[in-house]
Length: 131
Figure 1: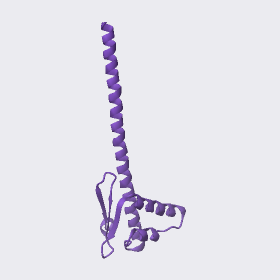
Figure 2: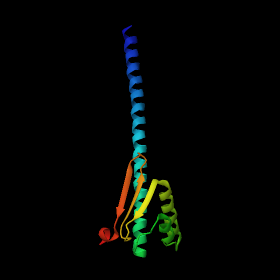
Figure 3: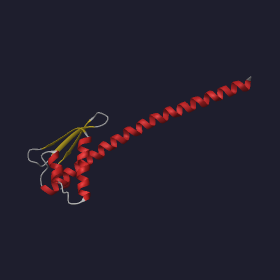
Figure 4: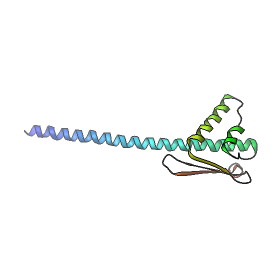
């Protein structure tokens, strides 16, 4: 009888341990997915920022809107074309993306809502950032 109780207690402990492991693993998976989506948002925003700065370096002013940005970047080779295509995808995929420039065309700001629902803002001023 004692050995049966010991076996039952051992099985209960094993079952609780296995269930606990799966619950912990599921929570960790959700956290990893959330971090991956946040990193994706940041990467897309950084790509857009780099493209806007690239446009400024070429044209001497910021584009008036995101469509002009894509049109004004070089498309001389496959890498340039791929970069512009990826830029357009990033702009489409950032929720609530909104781009504005300052009146003198020397600074910009874009905003978007990240996957966690938080409003994010990115600002740039070529002369302050690079000189």
